[in-house]
Image 1 (cartoon, one colour):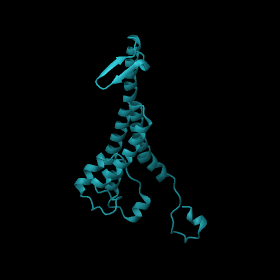
Image 2: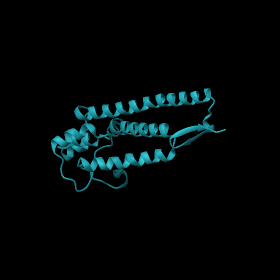
Image 3: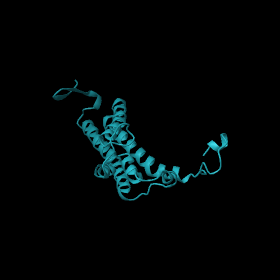
Image 4: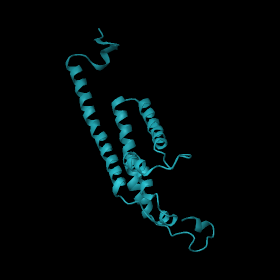
Length: 178
């Protein structure tokens, strides 16, 4: 939509700018995907308390996306065969990023429809997005529970006289330093 401001383009060649498709795509795809990735990384960081583990988890999310895309023959991966309707229907629900559900919905759109239509939040796309939001919510509700359990263990150590920094761990046993 910025091109006609820079380069002269004949009238009717470019549609007018509309913000709705960008906002809709952000709300339907970007926000749930961001919430899922953030929840996964937050849980890994809270459980492991390790920057390295969180970094490895972020790489695993990235690699996992490409492995999943190759396994389901995503149209985004070059050289894949066209997916069957049965495979696309199953993957549309399980794809954590929702692209398969979008491809299932927009599979038979004409180029004109692709330029003007928005994906409908119905059917498998709705199920997929609700599943992603549910998993994200579940992950985020686990973190306080994990922290409470960790805090209770530390409180028990303090009550028994074993401070966290006075415990030496060796494979198979725990003993207090004297």
